[in-house]
Length: 333
Image 1 (cartoon, rainbow, N blue to C red):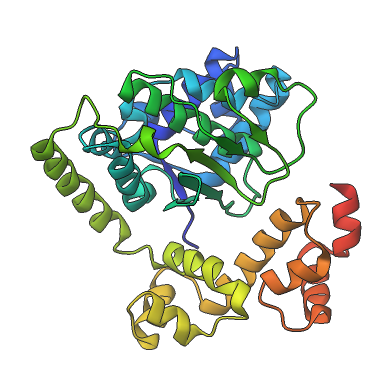
Image 2 (image 1 turned 90 degrees about the horizontal axis):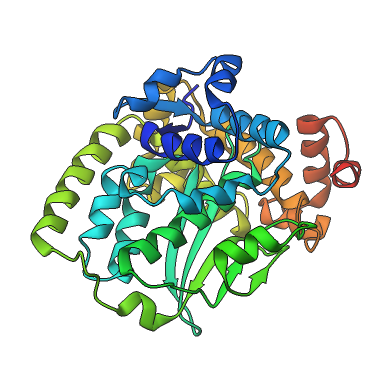
């Protein structure tokens, strides 16, 4: 089965953030069967579930559920791999974020980024998908904290978003969040997001360099082409996440979304030890767990968001996935 992975550059940033919080990552890596020495190998990648377990153990070891916010202190473009340098050489942050979205999979396959203009400004929206384990809240908070700190480092200004949206309930101690983001916070949000003022993202970057931007685009494009060649599994998951709220997607619709024939899609998935039906079921299972953590969504709404036309089918599938009912699962959460 094709696993989602995280680049050694991003994993190194996570480790630096955790070690700032007093966590002995070397011993946690040993405990998890991860290779600590591989952090210094630019081409190494770590299984996403391994990184999720690392976050979980780090929270236990430190007693600090907000430890992901330490990523705001790791201000270096290398954490974003070659993508960081591509962002640096962009004309402005708007163009830089467009590059970040385009090349995101180089950094970590589990994250889905989108960037869009809104009536209030520009919004960078983040979704983190687990592999076999649901993603850690700290992982998403680390990504937002680091992205904002990177903007401040690049511009030399204290960029303050209009709003930071965070999924999940507000923590008892808000101070770490207020110190890092320095702007209004919205908890129990539908997604993780940073909402920026247009003027902050349209302003020229001091590090802008068109020739370097083109060079980094080529490096990033080459890396992504090599990396993506056998990763249609990830692309199918992304397409399913987009299409499910419109009803159960047929394989033909997903193939069209990926500009492939059905036969080619089926063959590539088989080559990766996967099947369309398994991915559809697995993606629904993963999203169901995430949606039930959002108190503002009713079970009926979750059923439709997962593409089930009949809620009873959702309930049957949920019992098969988790050996309990959605209501009981939510109560445990």
